[in-house]
Image (cartoon, rainbow, N blue to C red; front, top):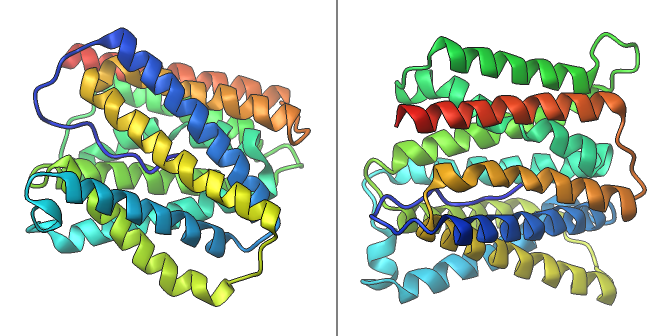
Length: 298
C-alpha cells in the first residue's frame, strides 16, 4: 500500500522498459514497507508508527517544494484547500486501517483483498467524477468483487469479520485516488503531493502524540528504515510516471502482491490458502481487463 501521487499531466517521454523497471522497484520497496509496518505495529501502537512515518513524509514533500520553481509558497498555492486537506486526512486514515489490518490478518490476506482498489476506482468514477462506465467494465468489477468474496468466504462458517478491514482500506484508497484525480483539474501533482504529506502529518501528530511509547534501539533502526523506504518508494513512483505512461506501467503494480506474499511466507510464516490464491487471481485478471479497456478507450 502506498500514498503515491497521481501521474503528472505534463507532456512526457514514454520509455516503457525504464518505467516498468521503476514500477517493479517501487513495488519491492512498498512490500518491504508493509512488512516493516506489520512488525512495528505488532509491537507498538499503530497511530505512533504512522505518525513518525508521516513526519518523514512531510519533511520529504517540504524538501521537494523548496526545490520547485517558486518554492513552498508556489507549491502550496491552491483554490481548493478544503479538498486537499480532506484528501490528506483520508489517506492517513486509510494507512492506519491498512497497517492495523496487517497486524490482525497478516500481509498476504490483507494485500489479496486490497488489490481490488482499481476496480473500486472504476466503479466509483461515475458517481464521483461523472465518468461513464460501460457494461464490460461493470462485468469486470463484478468479477473482481466475486474474487473478494472468495477470499472472505462469508458463508463458510469460518468467516472472520476482521477480514473486511482491508476491503475498507481499499475503498478509502479508491476514494482518495478519485479525489486526487478531481483535484488535478485545478492543481498540479506537486501541490496535491505537498498537501497529502502536510495534512497527514498534522492530523497524525494530533492523534499519535497521545499514544507515544518508548521504542527499543533496534526498532528505531526499523522505524528509520520504514521512513527511508517510504521516501524511496515515492521517488521511484514519481520517476516512473515521469518517464512512461501510467497505462503502460500500472499493470506491473500487481507485483506488490507477489513480493508481499514472499515476505509473508518466509519472514512471518504465513500460508497462502487456496481460496486466497483463487480470489486474488480473479481480482488481478479483472483489474488487468479494466486497465486494458481504459487504455483502448483512450
